[in-house]
Length: 207
Image 1 (cartoon, rainbow, N blue to C red):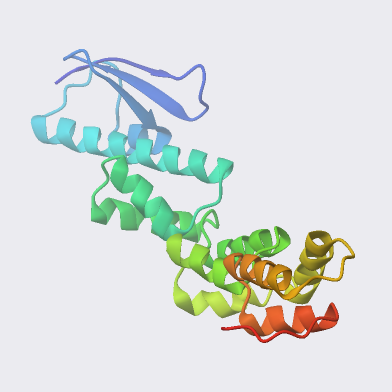
Image 2: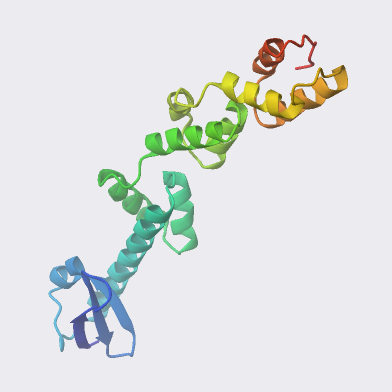
């Protein structure tokens, strides 16, 4: 197969466009151009053409992965699932994720801490944060360190009760509803009980 035209992209720095004899257009990085010693008019063997197409596809996956990480942080597991959706095999997924970790674009420890801070700041408790870390595929050995960076649950519980009960002297039913709402937000029964005690209400909770 002959490369009919090879030129740099006008829109993406570092990208080259190779117009192939069969009418296809390959989007290549500078490394592929150098590694395959490409030039307009070069004739590729079937094996070379296949290898070049595979390299172009890997480059496209890397570019899409970087673009995704720039928009929204991901765990390695989340990015791996996305790469799989794009068609990358296990070997390619591991190689791309590993390289992005080496470059500092992918870091499960930092991501776990970000998730913990985000959800605690929004008024969610430890159980909710753990559920989110699990859902996002963050390794369990990173959870405790991340949770240590979450905000103090006492402050969020006090703010919730103050807003929810609005200075009233609540009856048992109101306290039960408030405690259930806090439990749904992921707070432990012990933290909820302490919060109610600080609020001046002593109630036995089933937990």
